[in-house]
Image 1 (spheres, rainbow, N blue to C red):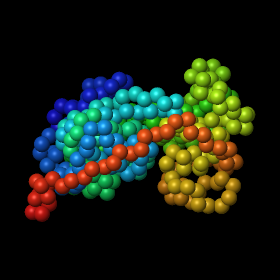
Image 2: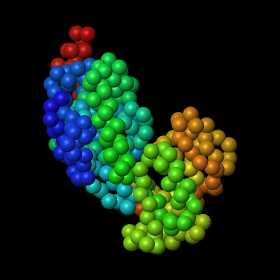
Image 3: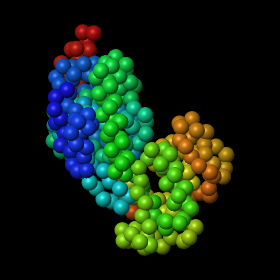
Image 4: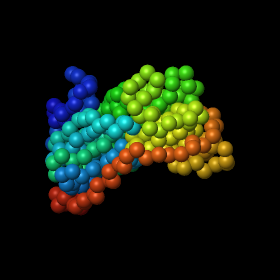
Length: 288
């Protein structure tokens, strides 16, 4: 590993933890990864992935630069890091299938290798030392994003609202970041809540990173809205689906369905991917 080629915006880990979170691969390490990944070119301004996307896997940057930013339900966007050549792009959600907590957008055109979840698992098995470094970086990044509530929903409700406690507990059990605002004491919470005029049984309001608003959602509805699972496929009553249990989502008791979903803002669509083969990479593959 060489020193980091990722510019990290505050709050950021320092010292050794920062180097572990944002390593830069040496040329020999890039060569070892090449046989597991697919080459891809990208344009300036292209969205490589957005908050909520699944199955991103791991991206290894060969050239160009990619900015990583996070956005919350109130529309606040903040920088997380900017990656340069040799950097790893991704965190543990790429391996586990959980939704991404950040956006990745190219600030300069370039090329990268992309490894899907299966490719990443194969790399970890075949290249134990390199795989361990990659896994450590991914886990530390996810932990840091959760600590800073990156990409998570905002829960709007008074401090004594039982629904607020329930929703916060569900998200905490599933290691999903969130913020809590009390409209009665938080100015930002009051500003967000005022135009929505929620009734008592609408609480808690849950504002997602893409601007949708859920009114007193059940745990299973929240899991679907956040992309933790697919749509419920079981009996009526808003219960936890069999699919939820299979995918390991820790959902709580049954609740009535949420009353409506309201969009505060539109999210940009995922940028059109551009793909091409690398001649050198093709020759290497053909020789195997």
